[in-house]
Image (cartoon, rainbow, N blue to C red; front, side):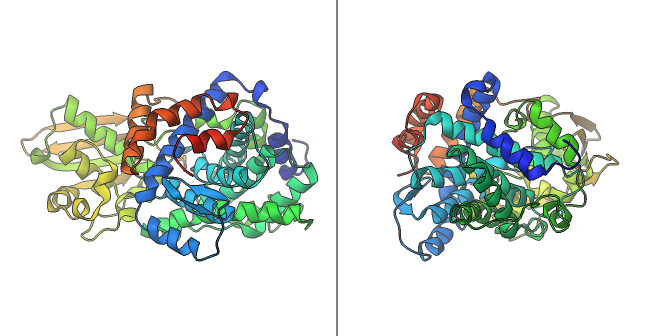
Length: 456
């Protein structure tokens, strides 16, 4: 990037330049994969904690029947309201895909915004819709990997709104100047605090929801002729000055010419914070391969990079809310010891109050190692001491669901089926799979997605 180049221009030009026919096959495949995954996760989010209250609140903002809501075939809302609810549902159970190096969930915001935009405007093809997903993920993740330090603000929301604007610009081939104005307006509408993460409060999916909704506001302001700021990213009061410790935009922008970021996205095999997944899998391996039994556990230490300790090193306690428990390694590892895995059902009231889980949780500790990479999830290791005097060690070198250890087709399908069943739409699995696999052949993207039965 030339020294004087405006990074907002680089990102918008990239988003507007993408064409489905030019994308590599692995990029096309991952766009479909994470569209399918995110739609299924959003259906499950219909039964997330507080989801009904969020819908009731949003219905009070005003009537309209423009856009549907995942998992709620009888609900239609104004487009910004639908974007808010869908984003909340996609992220509401911590089951949506994640880009680990960026520490960012790109699809919750991008997909929610695109679903709303595609239902309120002119018909868009499957190719346009899928290309817009790739564009939005590229932009949001680029902002994430351009921030090499620990999170100050909640990046899925703060970087997410810019990804949404870029995705919508791509979707409708928006005029460049108008797209740049919308990108500038996103700065005025950006928000999202890490305090909700520290406390394990449901404001996390609310912040994601607000980013998706506000992206439509930014787009509409630009369409109305209102100019946006011209240096939203690198200005003295721009995104990086306000939201991140420092920026490394040059190397991140250079990667735009080196593939697409959606191929680097990870599945979430468990409905928890991604930082808890390594510990869950380590416990599963200890149970299956080293003969560990919950009744024989004296202590379990999970030695991991500082990010893991920061995100999920909190203590388990009686009366935990679902959002807190999803970000508590003590709880997640204890559940795995007792039940063999962590599922959506493990965050209801009865499961959260299981006294056996809390007893085991008190034997589990997360210990930060000296890894200098503040965005690292691995390497890590679980160290177990048993009551009969053994010491068991389980290394964690990759995260299940990551590009280095992807879910198999069968594992992906099992997750999708479980999500659809949890959301009360088990019968639409085959129709949804067909719709997504053939989406790039469809002249009407939303007609195909609505026809699958996941939304009205």
